[in-house]
Length: 579
Image 1 (cartoon, one colour):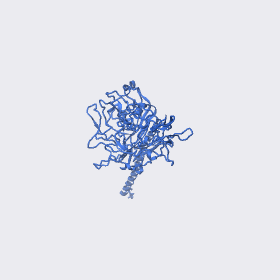
Image 2: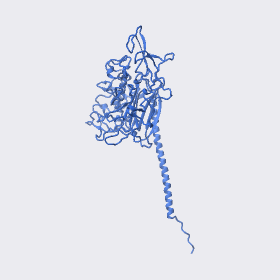
Image 3: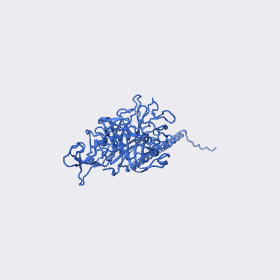
Image 4: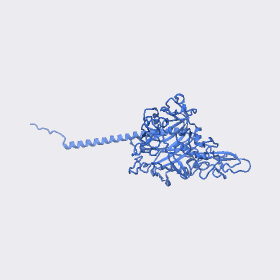
């Protein structure tokens, strides 16, 4: 018989080795694909964040390029510690941003200014406004950048208060509705309505805000579009629910037909609700309410001056309108009317309202299909912004007044009335480093300290020390000595929140005024001889910044980029805003 050839086959060992090799190859391939997928996912997230950052920067540059000398400008710096919601009673540490340490600082700054150029309403709806619903436009608008509060629950309209069908901005436990607030678990939903709803009864909704990585950055533009003064055409009809109207009479809250005193002045609830972007106010109304209003006499000339700010050591200056003192400094009225009252702190012996109840509302999605609720999404420009920082600077020489022969002009010293002083304006440091003004890195006396990794080299105007007459630091940042205010209010533990506010008023271009008299304009003393022409610095002179520096931290919704991405850019402001 012929000999059989042996049958070739794999041994068990060889099969096992082959399987192992195959598994290694599969695992390696899967890892490669997994890595590629993660890289692709991070790349998509990065591209999305870059797209959002670019859109925000373009929007800011366009708006600031149109910034007007009219009206006012205000920058509010708000800093909160990451553990501001730490609940000591349960030993449960709640961090606003779990990516950061408990002592990390998060910033919720706000930038408010007026912009020129014809603009239309975002979404003018309804038929009760401007003779049948024509689309209004305006050559001037007030623009606000900053974080917004979110109330995604449906909130029904109040029966007799058309502008109050948004939630109250205070919780039932007295805390202000802010972007970081949380409802007390034991109390249940505690954000309330201020009026009876259409279905009867007072309703509460959940006021708990999302974590910092899901904070909304908003841009709200309100048109100053006067309709001739008849509220029947431009404002909401009294006592008539009108969900299809998005105009209101005033930027500020009114009381029984007139504006309240400085201590109670606050933003109009209708504007903060996010449903309105048209107001019947005009510039003369702004100046009357914020700067020149004295309760009886209306306009005063020269305007503002002593009522503008509190000047330490000076009890009386010239041209004080009668009755003005009862309404406080005009600078404080701007703060109250723009940022609200909400909570107070002591600043160099003066009680100062810091305005915590001024956060506008914005939503990612409209709560209902009603027309008014669609407006709530128009103010959102970024849905995941954990930091928004605004700082400003002046160029060297801003505010300097020169003679025709290029010498620095001399003027009467308004602080003493004795002699003259050179109108030097801002004196920039000679080391070539731009001094950015805003919330500083540290004020140890007030318990404020930014971790080293977050420091930005920012100081207050007083700390820079480069301001000469006719610019006075208190006119910009308030009484000298304690500009950074530690905030302790309902629900806010000590050393967890701080505020610093820079205000640039109506006078951005007139550093002095002239008086021809034989009386000293400051001391009132008689000067022998013929009337003399006096040049006096105006304490309300607050030239606009030369540039602003914006820093923001953006996140992707799926948290694919740990810690998000920080962006910083500098925007030069129009030359016309400098004297």
